[in-house]
Amino acid sequence: MSSYSRAVALVVIVAASGCGERQYTAPRELDNACSILQQRPPYERAFKQTERNWGVPVSVQMAIIYQESKFIGNARTPHQYMLGVIPVGRQSSAYGYSQALDGTWEEYQDERGRHRATRDDIFDATDFMGWYMSQTTESLGIPLDDTRDQYLAYHEGRTGYVNASYSDKGWLIRIAGDLAERAEMYEAQLRSCGRD
Figure 1 (cartoon, one colour):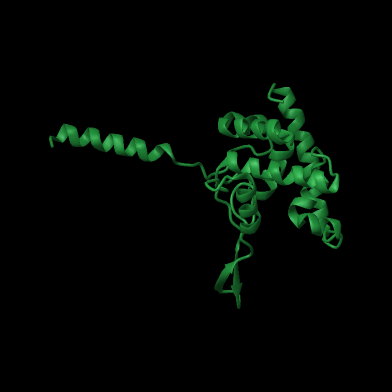
Figure 2 (cartoon, one colour):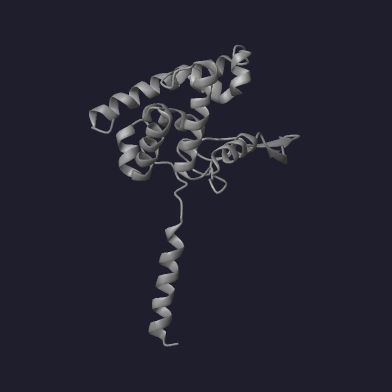
């Protein structure tokens, strides 16, 4: 093989290896919905597809992903340590944009027939959120645009929400309220830049 052929082959291999690569870094300006979507066009397509399929507003999806992963596709919960230094595993199995737990993700994959879906893919993560939140609406009557209560049911699980497991978690109630405000802010920004 000539040196030219080797060089061409190397370029093809490098280019092909980058095709499936995912962005695991957070976008800049997380307080600006328009900037986030401008930086990451696939996010906008994923959010709008989920809104069409499940009815969850883009601003609500964005607010919850902001809280769960800060838009980092491979986000994981922190490690736990015994005696402060010996790692003993992670706080939970939550992973990806939506921080879905292993068991809930497997339930989603089975029910939707999407066994190749991954939590670090924005399209799969938002579809999961739409699926979960629409079930919350169906079983608990929480509107899809009620960011606060949808988040409480998302974080605590529907049974936890019904049992008000969040009631003694002031920090969680505060976060849910902040997310409702963030969703309103994102919605206003999306209207202002014509992306609503």
